[in-house]
Length: 239
Image (cartoon, rainbow, N blue to C red; front, side, top):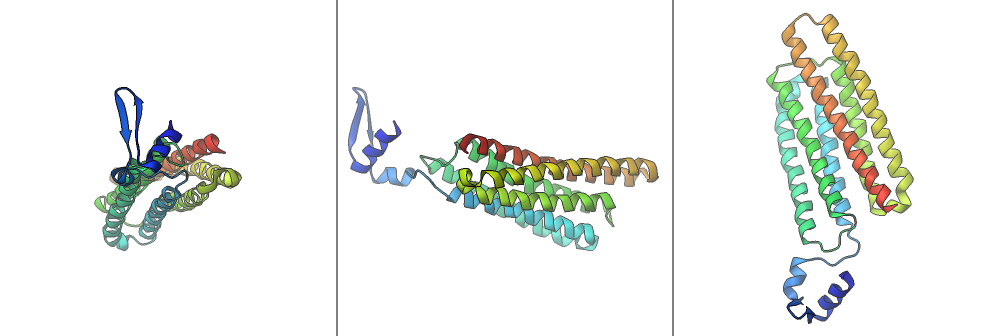
């Protein structure tokens, strides 16, 4: 069917599929659909989106190191979130206009939204740091943020290699395995730090604040692992 339609498009002909259906491809069709067997722009946009996720993690790290930067970083991450949304919109718009996609449409859609959600996770956590007036970060929050930086670096690496899945299969899977290992380390840090809160922190307000922040950071690491699972699934399909 796809070959048949492409022939129609090249010849700008009207072709009868049966007695009641005909399809016409001309100048309007060129604008509506892109007939390319391989289109690397999707992967370039994925990398752009992954870099926004990584940049958000760096902003979080700056606040963990110096809480006085929190108000400034809130403004920056809000702008970052708008930029990430714009890239996501570009991917979805391109998906709607592309006839033949390099990987399954549902995979492109899921990966794009997953990357965009990562920035949202970080934005929400940073907003809570400001709302709660947390002040100096506890050690566990700093450790989880460092793990997020490493995880988002591996996410960038994995997406950078997706253009040629067969050639880069081993490296992509290596990146996803590292993300899983980082998430497991995050689980360990989270459990240890929550136990510390209940053992040592006597102020219930402080306990509630930091327990919530730790949960949000750990949830973001879980999200990184979910993204790596999606990437691994794509590799299994196309390697």
